[in-house]
Amino acid sequence: MKNLEIAQIFRDIASILEIKGENVFRIRAYERAAQNIEGLSHDIDDLARQDKLEEIPGIGSDLADKIKEFIKTGKIKAYEDLKKSIPKGLLGLLNIPSVGSKTAKLLYEKLKIKSVSDLENAIHKNKLKGIFGIKEKTVENILKGIGVLKRGKERMTLARAALAAEEFVKPLEKLPDVKRLSTAGSLRRQKETVRDIDILVVSAKPEKIMSAFTNIPAVKDILAGGKTKSSVRTKDDVQVDCRVVEDRSFGAALLYFTGSKNFNIKLRQMAIKKGLKINEYGVFKKEGFVAGKSEEEIFKLLGMQYIEPEMREDTGEIELAKKFKLPELIEQKDLKGDLHVHSKYSDGSNSIEEMADACRKRGYSYAAITDHSKSLKIAHGMGAAGLKKNKSEIDRLNKKLKGFRILFGTEVEIDSNGKIDYEDGILKEFDVVVAAIHTGFKQSREQLTRRITRACANKYVHIIAHPTSRLWGGTRGL
Ligand code: DGT
Ligand code: CA
Image (tube, rainbow, N blue to C red):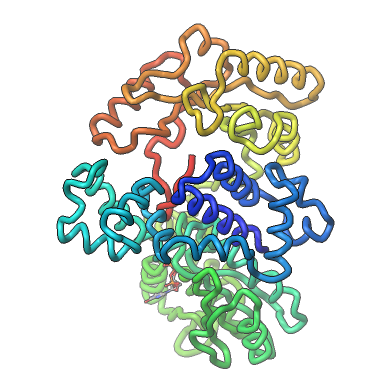
C-alpha cells in the first residue's frame, strides 16, 4: 500500500507551498487530497490500475497524474523540485506541534534556522527573544513541541503500526512454508502506541522464511539477519523483528513475545509456585516439556482463565483470571452505533447516505451525523441554512431506511470562554449534541478546564468529544 506515502508527499507539498506563501486554495487542495487518501479503504495501486483515481474526492487529473507517476517511478518530479526550492530541514520544523509555516518562515528569515536542532540551539542561546510575533509563551510551546516530537519518533500510533505490519504479514502468510503466523508485542496487545513490530512464524524451513522476510519490498535496511531471527528497518523507519519457532513452542513463544514484560514476570512467578518453569520454548516440569503449542493450553495448565492480549499489562488481570472472574471485553460485534460521524456537509469525505450505509454494513442500528458548527471555518462548519438542508436530508433518508436510524446531531464548538457555538433555540432541535474544543489549546490548564466544565453545564450538551485533546505521536488533526 502506497496510500500513506503519497498522502505524506501531498501534505509536504502543501507545507512547502504554505512556507512559500502560495495560493491558499492550492494549499488546501493538497491537504484535502492527502486527508482523503489517508481515509481510503482501498489500495491506491488498485485504484490506479482500474483508472479510478479521479473517483477519490479532491483528486482531479493533475493529482491523479502525480499519483500515477509515483506508483510508476517511486518519485514525483514536481515534489522533488519544490523540495529543492526551500532549505533542507525547514520542512522538518513543521513537524513540531505549535510550529506552523508562518513561524517556520519567520525563524528562517530572521535567524537562518533550518532544522529542529538549529531551533533548539537558538532557544538555548536565547536568540528568539525580541523577534516580532514570537512571545515568551510561544518559545515555551515550541520547546514542549520539540519534546513531543522526540517522544513521538520513538513510538508510532497503533494504526500506523498495523499498516506497517500488514506489509509483512500479508506476503508471509501466503508462503507455503509458513505453517502458523502471528504478530506479537504491543501491536497484538493493541496498545495506543507501538515502538517496534514483532512477528512469529512456525515453519520447517526457517532459512526460507528469513530470506523472504528480509526481501520484502518495504525493507530499507537489514539490521540483523540470522537463521531463525531477523530485524529490519522499513522505508518508513519502522523496525520489524521476525522469529521462526517450532510448532510445539508456538504458544509459549507467542505468550512470551506478546508480553507485556510485567505480565510475563508475574506469570513466571506464578508458574514457579506451581513447580513449573515457563519460558519462550514451553512450560517445563523438572526439565520435561509439558505444554507450549498454544496459549490456551498454557493458561489451562496454570489453572487459570485465558487472558486476552489487550488485558496483559499486570494490572490485576492475572489475579482475576485465577478466580475465573475476568470481565468480558467489548468487541466490534457489541457496538450498536456511532455518535460522532462527519459528512460532506463539513469536513467529511462521504455523503450522509454513504455514511449510513457503511454503519449498517458494520451491523450498527443508528448513527448520529455530527458535522462541525459554524465557527470552525477550516472544517466548513455549518450555519443555520446548512443545518436546515442537513436535517431535511436526514428526515428523507430516515423515511426510506429500514431498521436503521440516522440521528440529527452536531459537533459544536466550545469557544475560548466555554460558550457553545449555537443558540439554545438551535441546540434544542438536535437529537445529539457533541461539544468539543478545537482551538485555543495554548490557554492555561485552568482556563481549558473552565471551558470544558462550562460546556458540561449546558443542558443541551450530551457528550464532550476528545475531552483531553491528546494527539498520539504529536500529529495534528481535528
Ligand atoms: P514496544 O515494542 O515498546 O511497543 O512494546 P513490546 O511490549 O512489544 O516490547 P518489546 O518489543 O521490547 O518486546 C516484546 C515482548 O517480549 C514484550 O512485550 C515482552 C517480552 N520481553 C521483552 N523483554 C523482556 C524481558 O526482559 N523479560 C520478559 N519477561 N519479557 C520480555
Ligand atoms: Ca514490540
